[in-house]
Every structure is written in C-alpha cells, then in structure tokens.
Length: 310
Ligand SMILES: [Cu+2]
Image (cartoon, rainbow, N blue to C red):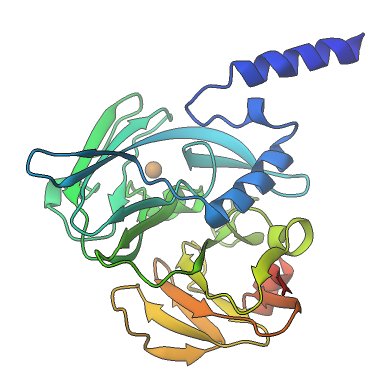
C-alpha cells in the first residue's frame, strides 16, 4: 500500500515537473539526477530559441534560472550547490559568431548573483556592476564574439565562493563557417569543496559527478571517427587542472579562437577559467583511460574511459 502511494506521488511529480529545471521530480534519487546530468552535459547544447531580427540577423534567446539546489557529487555525497538551471555545470549555451544573444536571467536564490560571460561586449552587459538581487531578473543582450570556446560564471563577491558553489557553464561561439564534422563532447572540469572549508576540494569531476565516465558511463567512441572535446576548467580553489588521454594524441586549439591547432600532445594543463578544443581519433578498439594528470584529482573523481568500438 505504501509503495502504491509512493508510486502515485512519483507519477504526480513527473506530470507536475516544473520547467525551471528543478531536479527532484524527474529522477528517483539525487544521485541518479546528478549522474544523468553529467552524461547529458557531455553531448547536450542549449542553442536557445531562434528567430530572425528585422534585417535578417539571427536572434537567440535563452532562459537561465539561479536556484539553491542540493545535489549529489559522488555516491552518497551531498553538496549544497548554487545552480544555473538546477544543476552543475549550468547549460552549455551555444550560438554562432555574429548572432544577437539575449539571456533572460532570474535569481531565485537568497543573495545577489550575476552572469559574467567571457567574450567581447559592452561594460553594462558584463555581469559585474549590474548585480541581480534575490528575486530579481536581468536580461543580458550582446553580439556573440569572438568565435571560440568561452565560459560564463557568476561574478558576485566573493567570486571564489560563488564559483566554488557551482555557478558556471560553457559558452560556445561557433565560427560562421562550421568546424569539420566530428563527434562533439563538452567536458567541464571542476571541484567540490564538500566540507565547505573554503580552502580545498574533496572531489574533482567532469560535468559534476565523480568517476561518472569511468564507472557509470564509459564514453562510447567510434573507431576512426574525429572526436572533438570542448574542455573548460572551472575548478576553484586549485590553480590548475589537466586532462591526459591514454594511447592517443590530440590537436589543441587554445580558447578555440583559431581554426589552426597550435599543439599536438596527450596532456594539457589549464588555469582557472581557461579552456581549449581538443581533437583526436582512436584507431584500435578497446578501453582507454582519460583523466587529470594530477593523480590526486584522478583518484578523487576525475577519471573516465573511452570505449572504442569498430
Ligand atoms: Cu553568485
């Protein structure tokens, strides 16, 4: 009988799932929600609602809602996150160079927040001096430039804390002539200061859940296919994070602002806020590790594997 009631409650929860991105009603547990979010973030982009402005320019409109949201970051480990659209990292906002971008931001939190986009735009769209009080909204409007792999994050003091709590995501501006066809993935490297001491991280992840691409979801890769990773480092409290691929080398496009790679390697280190586009292939089937080359980070959750099949 109790089970029936529980099922009924879950069913009502599913039907009533709000559009604001609150996670609980969609999943059986916070752990399932967080794992699912990490996996979805790998391949999911928010390309906005697309219309044309008079004159023909593309207008892309996005909605981002800040909310305090407890999430799971490793099995059984809860973290009182501050989130954009209900999870960490926030949505991967994608557009094309020259598009007119509008981001409708609402702060459902308990303190001021903002969205600071990396890119080129006017001062009053920079998310620094125009703080958005709790309960208020703000519209960011700018032209997307330059093309490349950027990030956005809250820029409210103390910024260190607002980023450590989870307020960041990828802002990808495609060149007008698209990059060559590839299988594309987003990897946001981050850390979680789960004891909230403000000094160090207890867990390191890609896309928000420890070891998710090692244990729960080895990343399927088609042998010979061009793989493109949009890699961003949003780790707070540590100066550097890194990625190392086993048994293959990758081309590096720093910040994605050139179509010509500048490095061919198997390990890349990045400071806070840095990002790069990596391109590689696997020529033989099997399982290949990828992980932070700070082995401490790898052992605290930043470890994954590619499962290569013909
Ligand atoms: Cu904030």
